[in-house]
Length: 614
Image (cartoon, rainbow, N blue to C red; front, side, top):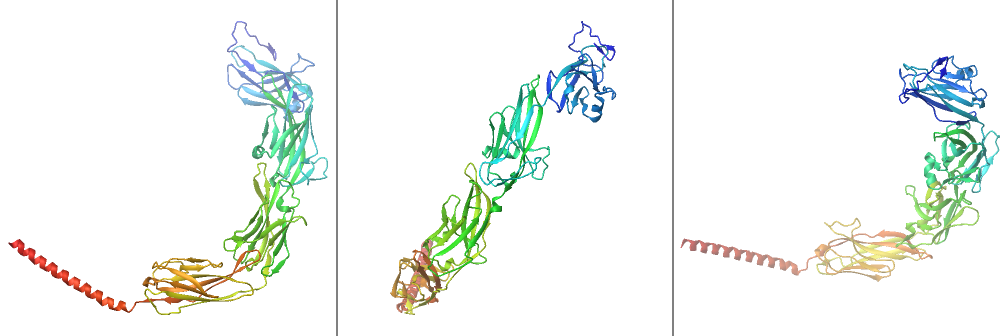
């Protein structure tokens, strides 16, 4: 073997198992022109320093016996004239991986780079033993990969594109939660057996459209596996993102349930892969095309809420009707968007709004707790969507009551329904305040408590009366209760409840501390009586009555028109006259018993002492 005028002889009787050996990948290597290539070369089983030099040659098909110097790690003047300028510009270079391994790199291979490449290592051995060069064939093939973008489309209506120069991708504006469809065509006419991979990528809105690192959205690998990149993986698992091949060359990505952060530029990247003789896959071509510049309009930016009329004044018992108009709701920007509409009432500036009624996203109507309770009954409250104008919702409260006076607001919430039917809130808007007033129909209420018999003895029946006066233009139903404030007992602030009579006239009796019976009755149209049978000293205390006026409306609901507490009366059970004679009698008997016991003890003690002396 001859290299640079030096004859290299390898004796035939020398084993090559421990001889110098040059390693190159097996060929041929197919690469596409104007792409980069890297050919590794390393040496093993050598003598001398670990830092070895390498020289690269090429044998072109037109002159297969003539070696052309490409580049050397030792001599900068080594390249032949046809490679000198390319080495100086860096298009052709050699990279040292380690002391005994390098890579020949060509940034943009040309058709004339086809040939057989030889990697040679000048000897550092004490004698020629082994191989000092190795060859691999490189075949440069034309670029037959083509990639084109189809016009973007949307799976649902309300899609808009804007005219743009051909150098820029079309601008697309979609609403939040709509579905974006992007399609591109990729095909290769390379004669060799190759595989294609295709990926859809995304870049931020402010990023340039020139080639740059992209965030992969989803792609089809060369082995036909589908993978979503980074933050889009979860959406792929949730079935919001998919990719499919249409026919023999078209690929379509569908990104559903769009979010504001999906705004940006979308690209399609196709790559061509070939399998080298060593079994490894190498990318030999890649092309990218911009598909669309997407702007996602949020649901919140399209949602506006107003109410009418500006001010309402109703009479007690009349129907209260309020309208709420939500723009951007009818029709919704996408079938995935659902809305809930609710009304809130605030009676005071410092009070939080309480729910009147709400039309849920699934169409169910919920009524506030204050409208369905045991005290007020079930009030007739409805909330429905009107056919016209679009996006109008009507709140109707039958038989308005003074408790309905206050400030009303309409609250609209927007939700996006995921493929799993879960709702995710994306927007909320609140209307201006609407004031509802009522024509005054006040109820004047007074209550007076008194004792018909001021002097009460132990064991007697104590009677307490409560006289009520009412002035109202409407029919009033009274509910009355009796309370006692007993000294030395811990009870509620208003006292101990003894008895009550509901607005329907049903009595409910409590328990006295003494355990004696209690009864209530009505002795006149507006006069109520409480009787404590067999009063005891433990019944001593201050007593009063409390009255609540209720008005019933045509919808059969109740309204508390007012409450009042009477004055306080004192119940003090005196002792009976015989009790004054019983006291000295009890005292005398007690004294006599004490003296008798004392004498008996003294006599017994003396008798026992004398008995012991005997």
